[in-house]
Length: 131
Image (cartoon, rainbow, N blue to C red):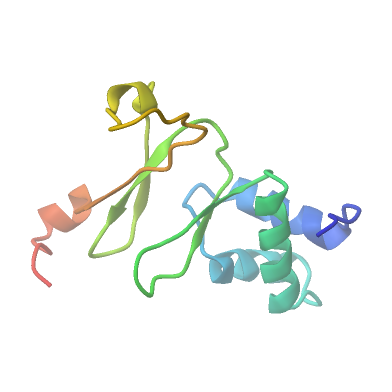
């Protein structure tokens, strides 16, 4: 699929994701975008999030199960930890992850996407450790 020219709507979506430091869902991005331009549709926001992630301007974070995918403005090499109770996502930095893994045969690693699942400090402190 050919990526088309940058539109005002796409720039608005990109600026919104970059302003949010919470790994927002598409719905959360839409809520911010519609405050700035009430004429923009959800479909436009969702479509532009997809295009921006394909273009490498943001990173899509696929979420487990039925949780909504999230988006990340931070394009530096990093991974994510997801709280299994509240869904909070935090960045994880690990250098040379591919060098620390042993493969049974030759394999040329091009990218590593690692997701840790557990409990965030807020959920541990409030005793939200049970389903």
